[in-house]
Image (tube, rainbow, N blue to C red; front, side, top):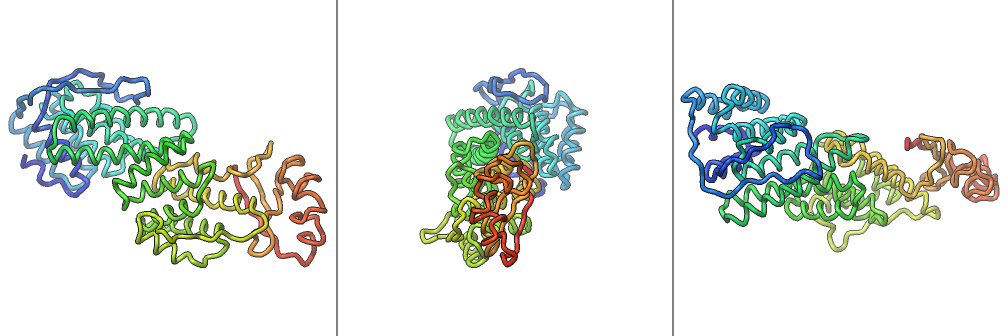
Length: 423
């Protein structure tokens, strides 16, 4: 296979493994639709029958072989993907059509062209000539990875998570079939790479579906496989922080761990620092956290973050939620869906919702602005509105009220601080 030698970097290892198995154990063809429309949960899994290797040749002669070699040797990912696309147009009946399609998707993945990668992964899965388990798993794997990176908003969240569920379920079934037939080293390479991608993609889909238990399970599975990859650390932290009973210490640790594994991402680093300061009450001990996260795959036995001491624990929960919501910027840049809606939901946790308002202007006061004094933009009747007479922040008799002249209503009070939250 001389035309595979020039693959430019380690990101091609998976494609090479798929090709190796494809060349060794091609099987009888199974006709499928050529459509690249998204799959749904109700679609049947695509399978290939067992059988002996089929004979393959460059039936279009030296030109076909030369064009395939040239495409595989292109060092620029976009150029490589384009050349394989041209190969597919020039030789639609090539015996190597499916591996060329796989290599096109590989180039698109490296170039971060996720929509194209998803579209062509679907075409590969539905190819009328796909006849090998390795190529089938390659299609499932690249589709799951592309879906992970494709942003979904509103109604598109449902279709995305439905396709992820289908891809992961069918891809894992294909891995079981592959493992049951051989113990070759290249089989294990294909299976382990695919399994990790399936776990990460499904963890994200679970978060989008507000299934924290599923997100814990899948991200934990991915962490066990690749503890030094920032994605499962990040997803595990989100699952922990947005759960009904969040463990802020563990969540902050894994966010710090994800940051240590993404040293060039200043936005994530700042988010970790901000969240730590809100929870702890100051920046003291932050260096210890960052060092522990960089040196350990999980919180060490003596790991502890002391929460800030305040009489208003409700305000602490609100403030922590808002700090987590600030991670939305990181999620959109680095991992587009990990997870937009989930992060917004974090900000809502523990926060009474007011009717008729989309922006909450909240007032804080006291030492380090740790005491929540109520919502400035919420209407009368809302539990935490400063305009609700019988509420905790609307009564002159309430200690945590701007109307109490003996406390925060006094001219001598500590300067107020307000924050705006769009929920």
